[in-house]
Image 1 (spheres, one colour):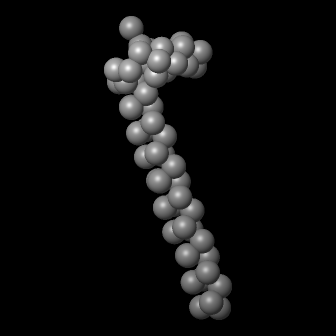
Image 2 (cartoon, helix red, strand yellow):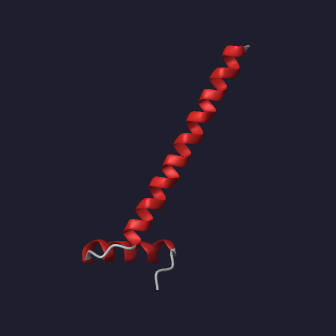
Image 3 (tube, one colour):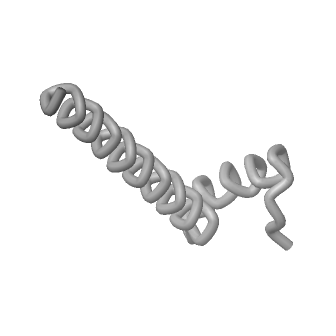
Amino acid sequence: MNTLNTTKTAATSTTLISAVFVALLGATLVFIAGHAQSATLHDAAHDTRHAVGFPCH
């Protein structure tokens, strides 16, 4: 019984850590692309923001 609970807790912890990591990575990428000063990166981010409805003006 203890082995089952330990395995379930470990799986839940791993899932939570993975979800938090992916959320932070995604937020970082959006932040960097949204504030890029390079013309090419900025233009690409600008077009993407319009495509997904992210406010940029």
